[in-house]
Image (tube, rainbow, N blue to C red):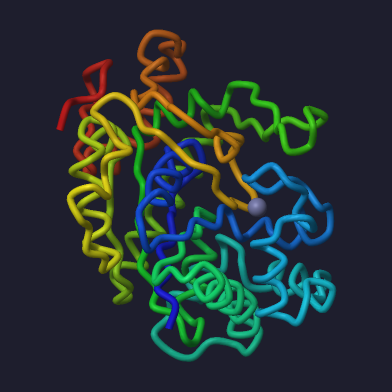
Length: 312
Ligand SMILES: [Zn+2]
């Protein structure tokens, strides 16, 4: 049974960095945001984290053969239809119910289950990481047969998240022709509340959920990685974390299929939390997000009155 570490949380919370670091651990295969695999990879043939087009990447070719007898056999329209029907934030209350779910939920989950199982077999890794982030998908995966689902809920100060969503970022996998989505601070704040609450609900439904704070993770990445490896059921040897230093990490080539541009980064990356919002975010926006997200920021241990995030 494939052990799946699902990285959840609102985008711009640091999930890609967490995924890249986890992907360096022996026994872990990081897949990127599998939610986008159907359109961006199978259909649009965008670039894998290894730099090759999806159709030319040997790893993904083998996964496709094992999971579906080749990606050509995946009915992408069917996946999209199922996604429209079941994987929406507004459906979370129904997905989180105690009773049975509709067959289309199980069918949609089965596509992911097959990818995870095949990826675990091809890579020989007991743990695969999906950094899809979406809370509704995490609720769907609760109904996937034959996977051992463990969710890492990554939380970052809502003000930092909202500031990040206002910035322009291009998507290199489309060779610079496309930009990542942007949200207004008010919209980010609402989404932050909804997604984080959804992961709290998932934990109350009995799914193994480990919450980490982005700011804390970057304060001591080695210790945090040891804790996450433990959560994933991995036993690390002394040398397994030699790629992480207090201030940087050395990353190898991965096969992250879709997601944040950082999945293409190879070599040394600085491990420093991005606190630009503390200086650069207009105070009116900061107050707005602080007000909308106040109760949950407080619950997660973020100080509301201070301008800088508190050290753990
Ligand atoms: Zn690849």
